Image (cartoon, rainbow, N blue to C red; front, side, top):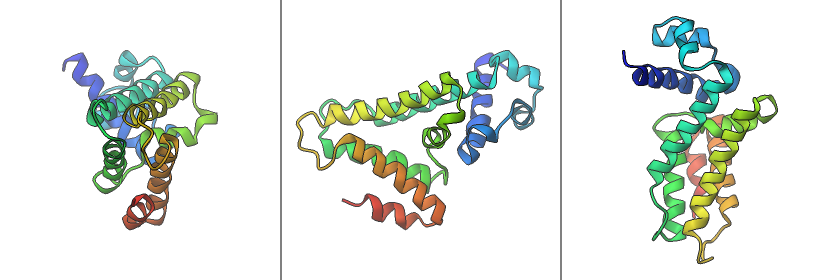
Length: 171
């Protein structure tokens, strides 16, 4: 199997576990079992768990930004709608937490590189919202939008009630 494909399979397995339980919800041994390879194969691609988690976070951020697209030309409301859909789909399609939201809650136990990558996710989403809200006509500050979405996702998952997300994020 090509190195890139194997790396992606490793990241997919790590993401599935991490989005269910956070940073401590996966080990190289478990990822190796999920992928059907030896732990050494995981170490070939990622020297340490922190390297894997940082790569996972960077990939998650990249995918989110690709999905959101270019904020140029969007209104603040349109940008909010796109970010809203990102979080809504994590709940309604994946029934999972935002990876970076989970990791952010674990900030004090994360290795520095992972912590920085998680902060980068939030900085990127805020920058996206700010770029679209440049005219200042948005109903809420970008920070309030992002906090509402993360909080609504956590609350809806905790209460096992998707309608809570919809009620909390309705405009």
